[in-house]
Length: 224
Ligand code: GRF
Image (cartoon, rainbow, N blue to C red; front, top):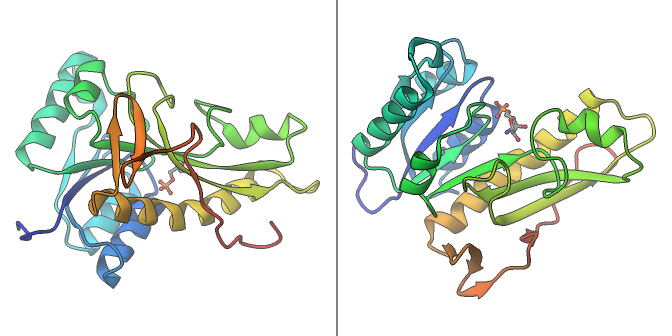
């Protein structure tokens, strides 16, 4: 269904899809003026697909294992995204690295959420890794996707304290709580055309943002 005047989104997932759920809830409540045209998963058993079905959102499963090469997978991702004519592509726990050609095709239109205060801890196991440092805070970053893994220009961050008693599971829960607030918020900016990627820099209402993006103070869960 094409929703007139509303930016349309493709949300790419691989697993639980709690961020997808936060985005669905923001759309349903009217806080996010957008239409989720499709949810794409590389994992046929991702729980996020059930969330999409419940919300009556179209789904596409591009099971990575069924492709002979990574390029074949990337070609199908491009084809699928183009077929849905989406305005923005939202990576929400999508665990595949997209090829440069996909990234270049959607430059400035594709964003990702990452569970660390980038540029710290790109890649996997961010909660475990931050616990092995003396850092006293951790956080979440939302950034435009570029060819550099978790290295694209940052739009926004939210942060929380690390407590002495924290383990990776406690941090994961605290970070998810921030993510579920920050992703819908950043999407409202994007869909209202407040945020743009120009010359590899992020602009908000025409002003270049600092390198670590907008620092958003968010309500912490527990004692942050
Ligand atoms: C989130 O922590 C996100 O930052 C990372 O993958 C996780 C996805 O969680 N990229 P969910 O599937 O949205 O629950």
